[in-house]
Amino acid sequence: MRITNLLEIKSVTCTKQERCLFESLSFFLGAGEILQIEGPNGAGKTSLLRIIAGFARPDEGEIFFDTKPISQYYDEFAAQLLFIGHKSGVNGQLSAYENVCHWLQVHGYKVDEQAYELLSKLGLVGLEDAPVRTLSAGQQRRVALVRLWLNDAKLWVLDEPFTALDKKGVILLQGQFAKHLAKGGSILLTTHQDLTTHFDALKTLVLEYQF
Amino acid sequence: MMNHSYWQLFISVYKKDVTLAFRQRSEIVNPLLFFLIVITLFPLAIGPEPALLTRMAPGIIWVAALLSTMLGLDKLFRDDFNDGSLEQLIASPYPLPLSVLAKVLAHWTTTGLPMVLMAPVFALLMNLEAQALSATVLTLLIGTPLLSFIGAIGAGLTVGLQKGGILMSLLVLPLYIPVLIFATSAIDTSSMSLAYGGQLAILGAMLAIACVCAPIAISSALKVSVN
Figure 1 (cartoon, rainbow over the protein chains, first blue to last red):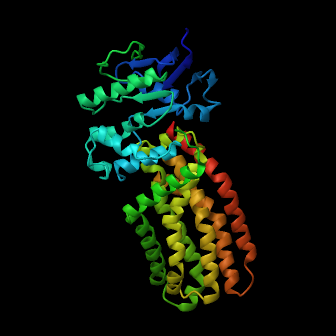
Figure 2: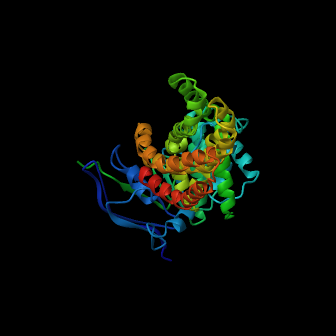
């Protein structure tokens, strides 16, 4: 059976400050596949992810999700997208629980007791009601990553998800990746570390630093 | 599971911003204190002649209101922009203008509404006549949400800049002129014991248009800023 292409990047070009980051970049991502984007600092990994998530327009080319161009069908695409960037969208004044609830409501999910259980599963027992700014960087990252357990988006776009996480956190996260892939979801991520778990459907894309 | 409800989104965004404002009470108190200080500076500068103050009161109260609305505007989208919440709102399956509408109304609840409520007290300081008082409160009630809507467009455009605050004031203050003209004209008319329904109606019409159009403009501005 041929894997259906969930996401198709068609000859995308991005130029920043008169430096070409990548030119005519094309690739596919099928259901159940995970794509790791590698490359040195400044190679354009984050720029590529932001173009794919629809925050930035490519200079040329188009992104297709389910064969539809995302620039025209953005709301449909957004319903199937989970994006966690460098700036993870966690408010420092609110507590971990409030942050999770707010995210759920903004993305159209029901708020239930599950959120509390997940926070304790992710090692935030007793910290659910403390303002997030009082937590450590790794703990703040975990508050953002709770979303991976609470969504039914098909495509995950994650920018450096392992930053500031401890070893246990990295393993926990990769376990969740495997579950998502088994359900037929796709993952696009950038990371400087190699994945410690083996994924059958792992593809890698290397972006070179261009002058 | 997906549970689409526009109301849930609206309430959630509104509640978040109001909760945050109440946690950092300075956000609510500072514009109000600024409003009070500007008003008290005028009698000191131009002399405490009751007749002169009465004549100048509508203008002073309104200019003070304009300036104090500007204080909170810069923060309207900045925190969300810095921590990435804005990206999450854009990548939500709901229309962005709806979230923006909730944010602007939350801004008005925490800065505009307290001003409307305190205006009668401050008007006493300016020796405003009783008949002009109701006009002042009414124009502020209709005018301050309008100020929040117009200002939010400027805030959306400048949120990506490092020091966007001053640029935003320069962009937004000229756009406040029509509001200022009709509001002060309404108060003037009422102090002459004439009907001021016309000016209020025009302010109301401007508010209705802003309510519908501004969220769309703000959303586009935010998308440009996030890019």
